[in-house]
Length: 496
Image 1 (tube, rainbow, N blue to C red):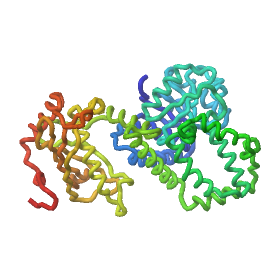
Image 2: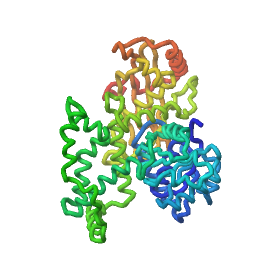
Image 3: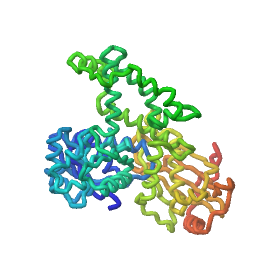
């Protein structure tokens, strides 16, 4: 099994619904079981937010969305599923019983993961007949955006199961980190628990309120952690001498009585009310779905920024996103393109997502250029200039662009772009792109571009190989019978 063909989600709450969204947006059919009377609405709202977030996250062509179905029983849900994800409430006996039901009904080759945030996998797999294929797959919310999943095996879990789970997680854009030994709360929640414990004392002792504490995190070390984690951040803090110097300088601080890790705060009614009131004042003006959308936009922005870090190679979660997009582009189901037809090539279908909009709700100017650039990229992939070609040191660079804005594209409108190849020689491709509104085919904008083939290693223009030229010349010959676009060859402000 090199990919997940069908997934099953048992439990459709915050985590289970987000797991379903992660699978569905990777093109995987999902069968969901949740006895909650409003499970369909809840999962549907989570999926809607996930689709909105992915529209901001990537321009890579997602596969057709998987089909979501709701089963009437666990047995029906897990039938023929390759990956089964249990996300029921965090009670040992409940989870153990559900997992035993899943195990009895699942295909022999299916992997079974639990979203538990702290229960030991050995305890969970106790009553299973096939415990070797069970593991903890502990994600972080929102599962459809945050790419980490902790993979933890129990005493009876096979190494092959963990290896396969890690491989399959990568196909849906996740980084499966293997935890070497099972331990309550694993690694992430252990760290969160330590910070949470200290935060509760700071509120209890009136050192600060909830908003101040959140500001301390999000305006300082939270951003450092987002891209570099803890130890790598502290390595830098050690200066040229590195981590050893940092430990020598700050290690003695661990003996100081700063923290209350061994003293648990009493979460009595008074403290619960204090925290609840401060939290209401801090965030109560927003509904939960609105907060989720704000959170998603912020996470998308961070990941997009990190994708461009390290000289364009990506960093942290941004590199994971770049790698995931690379696989999406490579595996994208292409629209039927008849390169020999005497008509412009339809190369790109997109939707105007909210992050593209200006204050009027219209697509902002630089997004037109992005769509035109993606159209050129689609043409290049069509003629063999793909990721492997670029990594080999050659590509086409856009050296000139003239854009006309003829109409308005609004949020959520579907658009498509076409390309007419005007001329080709051994180093250049002259193209004319058009963005259309899908609903009525109205022309929204046009762009005339000149693409120059370059040898990136030499840093100069170079002839394209015959393998590429033959494909683009065939398109140019088919397009030679088309009338030249009336705007081709114009300069700014020129009417004819």
